[in-house]
Image 1 (cartoon, rainbow, N blue to C red):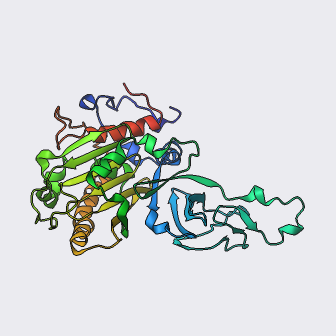
Image 2: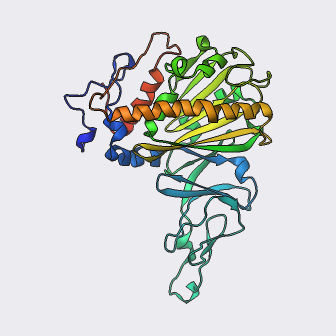
Image 3: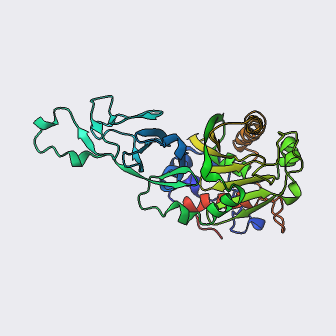
Length: 379
C-alpha cells in the first residue's frame, strides 16, 4: 500500500479470510483521518446509499435533499412521474440549489436565479442571451444513479455501478418473506442520533448479538435467542429470530399481527441496516452516516401503513429511540475511546461452528469488505 497507516507491520496480528483464525482490523482503521478520507473514494462514492422513501417524493415536483460525505444531492419527481437524482449544485457558480424537502415546479438557484426543470435541464439563465455561443445544453444538472427498492430510494454516485438488485440478489425476497406488505408502507418519522464513534464501530456492533445478553436485557426478553441466526451473503447479511418469546416483553408489548416472528434485521453494504419488529406491519432503516473519523450521525426512518404510528408501533419506536439506541451508543462510544488506547490494537473474532447468536462471523464478513475496498488481499 502507498501509505504507512494502511500497511500491516510487525505489531499487527494477521487479518485472515477465515474468521475462525483471524484477528480483527487494527485499531487505527477506526481512528485514522487518512483511512477516513480514503474510504470516501474507495467505499462511499462507489456504493448504493439510502436517500429517502418513495412516499416522501410521491408528487410531481417533490424533492428531498441528502448527502454522501461532502457530495450534496437531491431527489425529485418529474412531471413525467419519474424519479431522478442530481448533484445539488448549480451549473453556474456552484451554489447549492435546494435544502431540506418540499415541492417546486422549477429548481431555481438562490444565488443568480438560474432555473432548471425537474428533468435537470437549464431553462433560464439571466442575461445569457447576450453571451456569445452560450449553449444551455452544456449546463444541465449532473445526474446520479437512482433505483427504488422495496419503497426505498437508493442512489449511487457511480453511474456505471451494477444495479442494486443485482448486487444484493436475494435481499428483496427475504424482506418480502418477513414483510409481505412492504409496498404499502409510507414514511412515518425520522429519529436522529449523534454518536462519538467511527461508523464502522456501529456496523460491527449491529452485526453481532454476542453483546445482547449482557447489554440488551429488554431485547433478549423480546427475542428468542436460541433461534437467532445470522447468515452472510455476498454484500449483505441477515439476522433473524423465530417467534417472539412473549407479546408483553420488557421492550414493548404488541398484538400478533402481520409480523409473526421475533425480529428480522439486515445489513446492506456499506452502512445501511434494515429492521422489522414483531406485531403490526413495520419496517425501519437505520443508516450510519460518517461525519468525522470519530463521529457518526445515525438516521432511523420508520415506515408504517399510512405513515402513522399506532400506539403499538409508537411503543416499539420509543423503545428503539429511548432504550436500545442509547444502550448501543454507549457501547460504541466506549469502544471508540478504547481504540485510542496504547493498550489495545486487535482482538479475536468469536466464531463457533454452529454460527449461533454468539458468533461474530458477520462482523468478519463486514471487515473483510472494508479491507478489500481499501486494497488488501487476504490470506
